[in-house]
Image 1 (tube, helix red, strand yellow):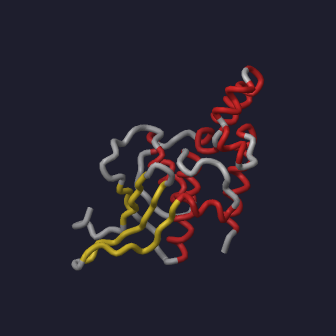
Image 2 (cartoon, helix red, strand yellow):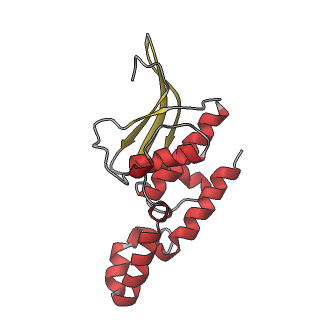
Image 3 (spheres, rainbow, N blue to C red):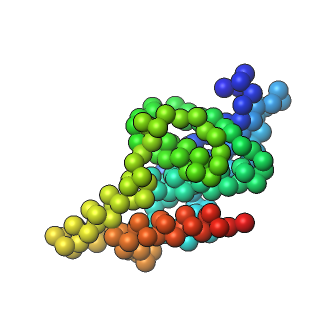
Length: 169
């Protein structure tokens, strides 16, 4: 990657957040051009998990917007030591960046499905669980509920935050 002299996007996960950086390699060492932590999504109204596929996509979208503002138009994905697997969050990041107008080479077969990016699987499971076992529902989705978000409404919440990111200057 370094010898290619292409800008790269690093994707790293911690116990709470997703960290993204756009980096260029220089003879004196790497230079970070811009970065995003999934916690920044809160500025756009995000109250759901900072680690799920939806947050990965939105973080990639935000990084893509920041990169465009710096006239960065292409980057390669650097997933570190992670094993690439179909539908992984690292590829949701790539999809977010591409949707923001940044050229990131990828194989469409590895991207998460759109329904998964929007969190439809979480919303539908939450709906079923709330009808079948309210106590388990409240325990499983306690973080969503404590932040004032019903997990059944995750898709609408995702769409609102996505629009907020896209319309921000």
